Length: 410
Image (cartoon, rainbow, N blue to C red; front, side, top):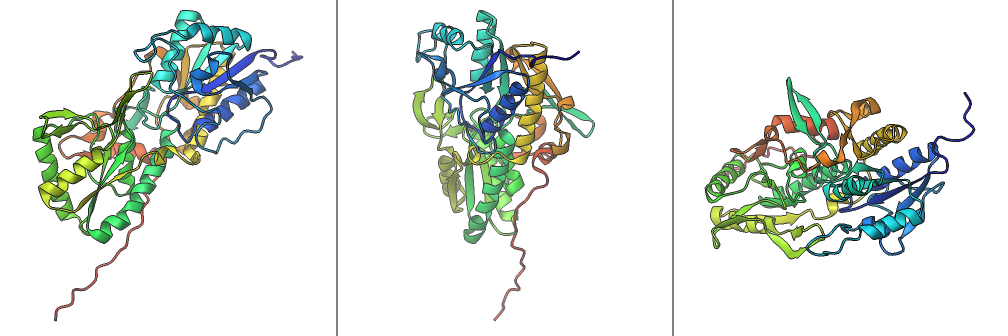
């Protein structure tokens, strides 16, 4: 049977990106746009996330336009706008969204985001019947994608989100670069990595030569703080070059001697529309206490926005394409309220549609680093986590100055 026109010709699909940027969002937009166009959709881009559907709307036409998916961030730009009532904004802006869905004749919406952005999309689907498909995105890698990691005969619940592979590669390279200055001064460098509630990204520093590590999943109580200092002292003394790089998540819960409480360090008390404050500065606190407690020269280094910046790396590029293939399947079956995910952790060459599945957007939620990946007593990441990273990053890569100079005895 010959079809006279494409299956979805005359229909419009819109794409928006919300929340924190990653190096893989443009790649995700391009991949979804290309496949939707092949199906016959006209493709619109909504600017600044949910904010672009407020007021009169802020929408651009992506159909038959050049798009650079290798360039990091999002050309559609982003915001942390919440269309539903919140403490910061008690007014519901859903009526504005519905009006613009009608004005722009949008038939399907693809939302690229984390739990907040896609949670709002799922709510629209459930309460207003808006056809939505979520697309995972976060460098923190803490969306519950229900992805299985097969390791040594055991199935571990892991996570794989576009944005994380590129950010993990950047953290690995950043850590490797810091090694040279740490060695030169025999210093301990406490390197702060983004990660509000999970330590997935922080762990990638071990592939750049990072040792030990602190993550939000396990708070540092007064007793554990003493054990941590002892572990740091021992690791430093056993290091051949008398230096140490300790990656810590920005959301690390650290015991404060003055207050007697365990808490995060806040960069700002202001919260966004989803109720999230801004963390930052825990590395400085920890470095200062290491110097005071152990007498070792310690410095803090915040990686900041570096891991989420720059070009989309190869693994992410193929991952976004693979998940976009699954979006095609969802569109063809008109199965909305779903999110495409990888069903297992695989190396680059196995990133294929047959290794994908989809999950209900309402069941996404957040997933902390699995207990199998972190040794709470040694403050270190396990061999299972190294295997998880190897699938994504390949083998660890960092230069090393190999020397064993003979000592001169006068």
